[in-house]
Length: 337
Image (tube, rainbow, N blue to C red; front, side):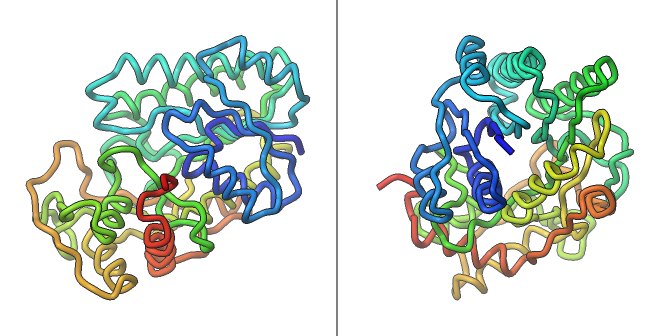
């Protein structure tokens, strides 16, 4: 297949490019590099022997999107591109709505105009809001607690409406839980700009000395050690899930939501302790007050992914921490020299 991967130079995108190339697909990356580095594509080439074609452009530039589809006939699109920091979305809601919603509309319009109706969309477990019960199945109530989550939910709604109006669409909405880890080679991994918003890159940057200490937000939740429970999924398992979704598009009519998670919940402290085992030393950390809006527990019911996509997470928490540390220790400043 010829596949266009928007946001393909980013964390999950670059790992998915590796799996797509390994599977024999021809990959073109469309990325404005606002939250990514072109060096990741050089690393993809080092792993696979093939560098994806690269278009540096913005989905907000409708002419650039059209030019990408005019230049090559694509069989499918994997859509990762978008701003993704929860806290930033609260501070800059207009930027998130403009970038994520308008950019997606431009992409979907050019897909339609060029007869490309196969799409794998990078959604998120944030569409479940503050869950009433776990594990979370795809039929759970949908809501959003912040502008970032709303952009994911609204794009899902747009795609559901599009698929209902036009039966040629084959769309899989992949709702990720907590992507972590890195490629086992240590060549590609998570490289956030500024202070990390997510737990694992914060842990790894404390371990490598870029940050002073880890803050654990709350130790008085009703869990086995007082810290929040989350479903941490290895990014390579996640990338493989995208390839399974691509392979399943033909048999899935309309718009199908699918959770990508392990189905198991680990506490924040359990993840930290597993990482300390991988590093071989304790990390400086402190208990901080709870953050508003943090759910006590969130983890997936992953049975639909197994039934419809033939996919199941294979890597556990120890492999996640080993690979995350392998990446960060080899690349203490990420993709920067």
